[in-house]
Image (cartoon, rainbow, N blue to C red; front, side, top):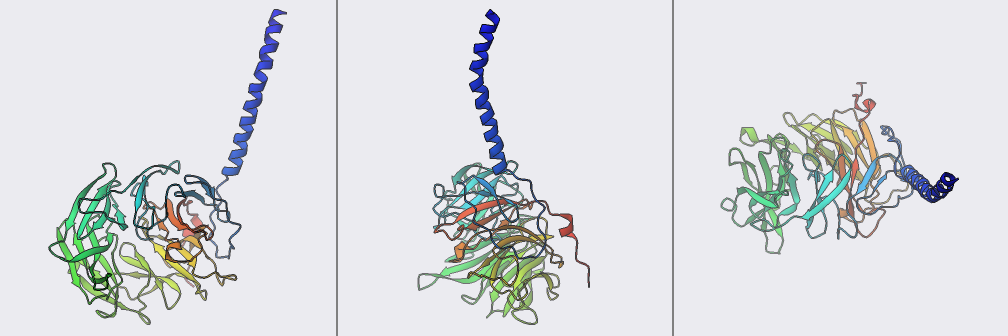
Length: 435
């Protein structure tokens, strides 16, 4: 009887604990049901998928799934962590070479932070603001992560190129062109990320109106410690320059007065030019990004994204045709090591109630071999009101992640989001048969 008297009260005392544990397990199971879902097979068709009801946003660091395509998305910035969040551009990388750090725009005045990122758990860590260099604050808009060293971020400061090292919070000088370009400042950096050797940039000079104009461009080899190209131009006669991943080819756009088209310059042969004229029959690309030895860019006349190989740029390989649907703008990102696929973000400049084709406000992968195979990833949910509402999506070096900007249904602020790219299905990687 003594045993029974002792056992019964102890059992009764344990019941509330067991009941609480049961509730906790139910709560965990319920939470898992609402936050976890099986990863669907990515869609590779070309149907029109209207945007469903806008998903509710979590706070920064929270995750959710795209309701149409099933891709997992992580919110990087919110009202507490950024005045204005987002990416800088489709060919300026958000992810460092091993996906352990993110370059994040956190204000509209050029302020940026570097976030720690765990690519395995798909979670954010701490963050630090990018400090001033010995020569002043860097131009973080065109900062480029090294393709070889995860602890080096290249950036322009006046006439200098620096590497910033987040682990130490310090800078090292790559090159100083104050003697070569007195009175100028460098603009729009690009780097041959396969070699980390060639750095290309435009040159600008302050004008009498208080602004600045393009006055030239250059390409510098760090290993040779020399300018491979040092080209002056007629004032304003340029749009941008960009070196390819290999470091051999330099694309120069907008030289209407100088050469009347787009220049492709061979840096291994003294900067020898190949020229593509705008319009038919050569169709020089508009917005573009470079792979290794080729460029993928928008054809403003045929409504296609085309590939042009630098060795022989005249033949056109159509990577994606948008047909008669002229209502979308695009950005291209070829930052992944795998040149077989490029990331394309599309956006409506004006709302289109009845789209004539697919991919509206989507971020997709496109095969670069001319098969026009696609993998559809997500709706970015940004409503275009100005340039900074564009998604400007860019892909990580290993092709596992992407980053994009969104005002999430037209809000008065923008934030950065990153998404985990699912494995590409085998069916999407087969070239289309001729005929």
